[in-house]
Image (cartoon, rainbow, N blue to C red):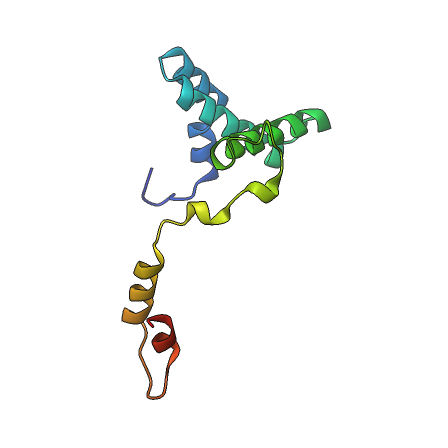
Length: 119
């Protein structure tokens, strides 16, 4: 799905549809089917017409639960967002970040920004 329509809503709606979710579930891909169903329902809740308030709420909460299962596995027992560590998801170590910043920075005379970082 690349080419002229890289960000096609209609393509995304076909790929992330309830029909695809059902196919996945019926053909031995229950986890993938669940993910597609959650995304499709969330899209309907956000962009769809004709849904009642309770259905929108249910679909949005489905997406929230899906995200929190990964980010905060204990959220069912302790639903306290203060226990979520945003640094847990950092993929780059501080040292790698410092080296990248240093290599991409044109150091001007008297510029001690990286002297402080690398000390």
